[in-house]
Image (cartoon, rainbow, N blue to C red; front, side, top):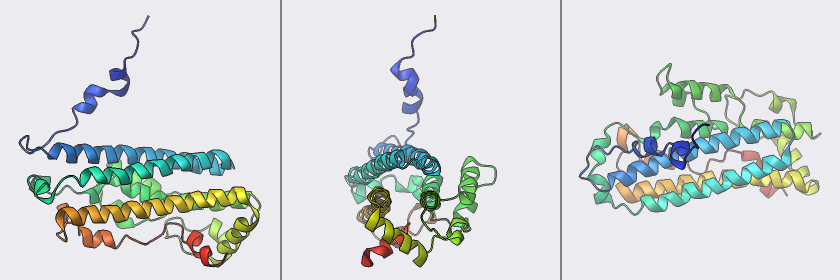
Length: 261
């Protein structure tokens, strides 16, 4: 009879706790910095897992379970925002005690966050080419670059529900940015007026879009609070770059119709 699996074995606790390697054991706050960012990467992994599942559910026409999955994604987004409160307990002088040891390391290099942007339709070829050919990160981003976004799955779901989604939208080049469409907006207005179930699904996408924008804003303020307008590590533009990512919705049609309803 095999030995019962323990909590530590199942979760690989020994390996997990061995992953935090401060570059200077003297600096107290470096441990917090490492753990927070490792936790972010784990949540990014779960977000991708859940959104991929949501896309499959939409492809199957299962709106109820897709809605439930989006609610889980939204709850995770709230956790991502809340974690910034923990990072903000670290003062600028505390961060400076170990910042130089980050060298070229930067959150700008998070391939999972880029993958999250890609699945929401915000794709940039430069984000793919930033990673070495043959690497795990490059392979994952190449696949997501060529794959439909969550919005593409939503439009295909609506077409399957009998709505007159333009064929040009259903067959669009998924590597290109999502652009507003007057025809799609007309479909969405009809849904909001006459189809409460699918209108709720649309609203959860709006919640997700707003949640991402909230996270971006809080991230900008956290960076400014910690390093001001300095350049970020790894040569990134710091707050100046991050501000360019604000107020850019993933699902523009869902915002455009607000003034038309």
